[in-house]
Amino acid sequence: MGLGHADEPLLRLTWTDRLTGAHGYLVVHSLVSGLATGGTRMRSGCTLSEVEDLARGMAAKTATFDLPVGGAKGGIDFDPKHPGARGVLTRFCQAMRPWLDDHWVTAEDLGVPQHLIDEVFAELGLGQSYHAAIRRSADAERTLRRVHAGLSAPVPGGLLLGDVIGGYGVAQACLGVASAWEWSPHDTTVAVQGIGTMGGGAAWYLHEAGMRIVAVADAAGTLYDPEGLDVPALLEARDHYGEIDRTRVPDHVRQLPRSAVLATEADLLVPAAISYALTPDNSYDVRASAVVEAANAATTPEAEAMLAGRGIPVIPDFVANAGAAAWAWWLILGQVGADPTDSFVKLRAEMQAKVALLLSAWNAGRVPPRRTALEFVTARDLAESSLDQVLTIP
Image (cartoon, rainbow, N blue to C red):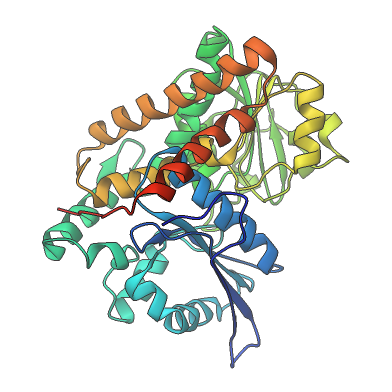
C-alpha cells in the first residue's frame, strides 16, 4: 500500500562512498504493488532533506497520473562534471542494488542523463534503469525491447523521444494555461530558467507551438530578446551540461545576469533548473502571469503563497513536470509504444485536462493549483488504503 502524501517516508537510506567520501541518499516515500519510482540526481550540495522532498513529490506525481507505483528518489552529493562522477554513480547503484533489483525504478535526473544511468545498469548486469519493473513482466525480453524502442524513437530536431518527453509535457502544461485563459499561443511570451533536458525540451515545443521565448537562462547567465529567441539555434549551441556557447549567440541578443530571467516581463515563467529557485526574497521580482514548475520543488511554499497573493498561480511540479514519469510507466505497461505520435497525443490530452481543472478552480475562487492537485493525491491515498494493487505488465 502507499503512504499518505504528508506522512513520513517509508525509508531513508544514507550511503558513503569509500573512495571519495561522497554521500548518497535513497528515500522511498511509498510503495505501491511493491514498487516505487523516481530518478537519481547528482549535484554538489545535495542533501537528504532535498531527496526526501523530491521523493514526496514523486509520490504525488504517481498519484496525480494514477500510476500503479509509489514514489522514491535518489541523490548523490557530488559534482557531476568531476572526472570521478561516473565511478561514484556506479558504486552508489551497486550499493543500492537490493532496492534497484526488486523495488526501485529509477531514471535520469539533474546531473545524471538517461544514457549514463542505463550504461551503469548494463555494467552491473541490471539491463536498464527500469529493471525492477521489467523483471516482473510476463515477458521481460519483450518489455525491455518495447522500452528501448520507446526511449530511442527519433523525433524532429534530431533527438530521441526519451530525451524530450518531459519537456514536451511541460510545454503542454504551458499550452494548457494559455487555453484556460483563452490566450493565443502566438501572442504568448515565455521565460525559461534552465535550458537542459527539461527546459530545453519545453522551449523547443513551445517555440514549435508558436509561443515567443523571450528569455532563457543557463549557468552562465540570461539571454534576452523581446522579439523572440531562435530556440533551435540556441539548443544546437549547448554543451553536454546544458550551457550555451556564447560565441554562437547573435549580437542583438542581450546577455544579462543569471537571475534576470526571473524578472523578465513574460506571460509565463518556467523555472526548469534548480530546486527552490523562487523564494520570498525574489518572488516579488516575478512579472509573469503564471509560473509553471518544470524543476522539482522550484518554488518554496512561502514564495508560492506570496505569488498567489499577487494573483500569480503556480502549476506545481508534480503536475507540470510529471510527463516523463507518466510516459515511462505507460511505456512499461504497454499503453504506448515506439510511435512518438501516440505518446504525444496521450500526454497532451492528460496534461491539458489536468491543468484545465487546476485553473478552473483558480479562476472561480482563487484556489491555489497545488491545493486542487493535492485532492488527486488524497483520493489516491484513500483508494490505496482500502485495497492492495496488483501490477500486471504485459
